[in-house]
Image (cartoon, rainbow, N blue to C red; front, top):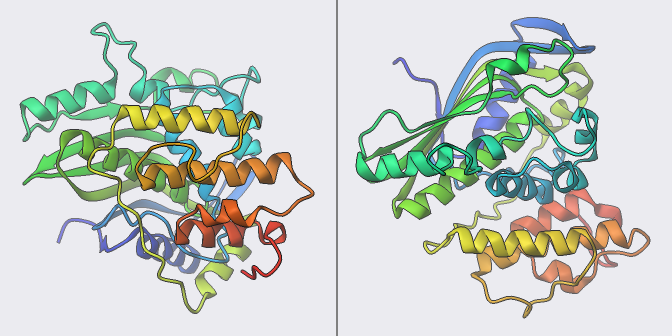
Length: 332
């Protein structure tokens, strides 16, 4: 067999990668002041990419940021304000304090700035429509000039993404020069499979597998204690995974992005009857309403009404991430 292991869900793959690097690291590395344990040339495939969210209490995943990052990419923007609102650490990667470069995959994938007025994403979808068996449906992310400045703090970790349409299913492949197994792998897989599912909806095909290939898969030594807590969890809840509606399109994304901005700026409140959207998208907006309350009302618990708008898996993740902000009677 010449391919990597196949896992049913991302949770299975995530735990297997953490276990392998933790138990059998191949190298110890020190780069840019960070010490890490590393396993090179890691590859795996996920059979069901829609099951992209691990329910791991010790991981305390930020499901709001995961959606914000994926939507930020799809928007084609590179602004720091949106994504750093949900992950303030990203401000340290910006050289000008207003934009990101290597981390901002959106302009490279989705901005319609090519000579043909199309984005890379537009081109590969058109290519797949014309020639379903094509091997050229590839979008490049890392650029050679990112390495021209040795002090550049923000070099893209992802080399490129590829779509392959086979037997009516859209498969996706990510190629990465390096991946932080604890943090980066978690967020990258979420964003890339989200993009994959959205592309499948636009093409009106089924979602296929997702493959992930990494040159340097590593765990920073500062994260080892947390990794050990994740690996020691005895059980995990089965909270399911929502599927993007078959009608998903750019109009839905624009509506969600408009709500995200208003809620981020505390310009409005989101309620159950505020918008006429499929429940999949309305529950994404509900995450931003919860985050609005967390950010703009730091001395108050999140309202029960806002939590009730979340799907069960998202609510559980929010409870694990912000247990001290839950209303009375909610015990993570």
